[in-house]
Image (cartoon, rainbow, N blue to C red; front, side, top):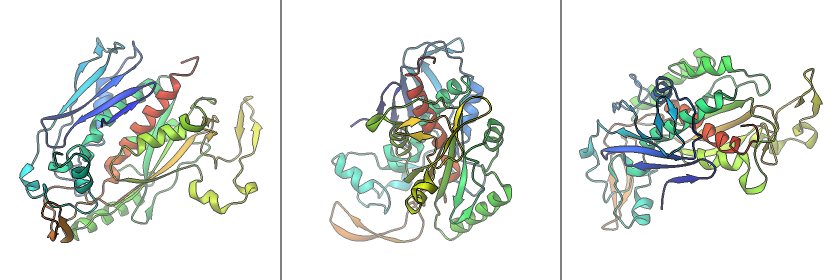
Length: 363
């Protein structure tokens, strides 16, 4: 019944959207790791609502208060705990949701799972607000990885049919990752990003929402990291990615396009490059073979559904009285969750990679 990831790295996310605070406890963080708090807060600020029409008007500073596991600028090796205060709740907007199920939300399934005692305000524990502590954990993991030369970056690949340029699956470098990371609207091609913003605003004006796709890449991951069958890199990444609300699909490398290829088209031929390293000429496998890193960039794409909270009237049920009703959702909601989910995807991949890197002999 817990929201816990428990492996070489363990962490638990706790709290509700409209409770006093949300937070995270991380276990098995290596001791003596320097964590730059300014960089950590900057990472988390990418997930926070923007001062524009592409996100919710809820204003949260998302300033983490570290309670344990950090001293004199370094991790101590004991549980790393952070609290993030909730300061801008409008709980009255959810007064009727203890009985009316919002379409596309977990109100009904949550009521079944927790026998009607779940907190429905702002989505409660099912809210996208819980990605803030995920981003804290991912920011910590990312700083530890980057000290080993491993960089994870993501961008908005598509919004409602409008597409950005893809990462180069062979030659993407840390400079491009950093460049995209620093953008207010993280696309590789700014012109495409501007078109996406227009599409998001159009949905907002129509009292509707749109979804999209985030592409993520991890470079310089050592070959040999991971395990087969149930403890593979894909397995761990997938478990964490699907902990992000609104995720509905995930593919690695060529993904579903591989189903339409022949073996000779899909296979990535090996060769030894001029540095004496085994690499592949193409990267349809997305940097992972048999659950184990090949040394090529790890590439994945994550599909997000449209925000289910929309202002248009929708048919639903009163699951207390078991009768049909009509609902108009109130409150402040993102017309598209994708822009704010980019660091969440990075965070999930950071944690997954650090989790497996701890098994690496030279870590």
